[in-house]
Image (cartoon, rainbow, N blue to C red; front, side, top):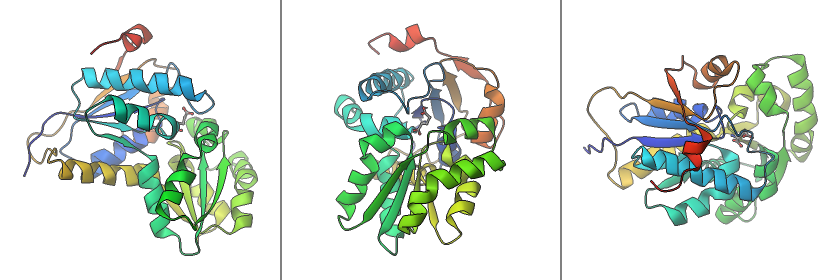
Length: 275
Ligand code: DGL
């Protein structure tokens, strides 16, 4: 039984990382979470590697100022390009969403053909492909960016005709290749799970990186004896860099619950150096 009461820091480009918060809270109900969503500067998906790394450093520094014991990069794009840089810089364990998703894909495929969908940034980095190949070099990987999925998920258009049409278009190469596993390599895609499943058919297994990441977090906390196994019910804290129109409504969709109070962190605060 360990009792490390410091919070787990989780960041994302915006609200999509709340899918990871929901899973971490479900799997680790004693852990307190500090969440930062960079809503003023999203999306990260189409931005350059340099810019995303710079933002990821600022997001991490903010979380470290909140005295977190671990950082979870809940954003696939930031995980794809900034994980190594953040691990080099900071002493606390840093968990990204790519490795857990890749591991789950490798252990789930039966025919050795895996599909990966994500933002342009994630797909262009080939981070999933490399991570999967490190685990099994024989696996055939089909990568596809699906940029329109992000606004469709934010709009809540989970079961509209337009979403189905877009999904058919994006997922055709994965269907043609006969993949039996597809990694939902973006925070927003679990929201569109049903549509993706409909297009790919029931035999294709979808890997939700949020679920896999939460499992990884639990494992690391246990390994380093850093879990908080007891104490009072945790009070999570939520910070964003802007509160855009319809933010609350969207956030509820991603979190699966009503969002408590959110505090705004200004870009000036975010870009201030030093902890
Ligand atoms: N959070 C991003 C990701 O998982 C999606 C949204 C964005 O492009 O910022 O890649």
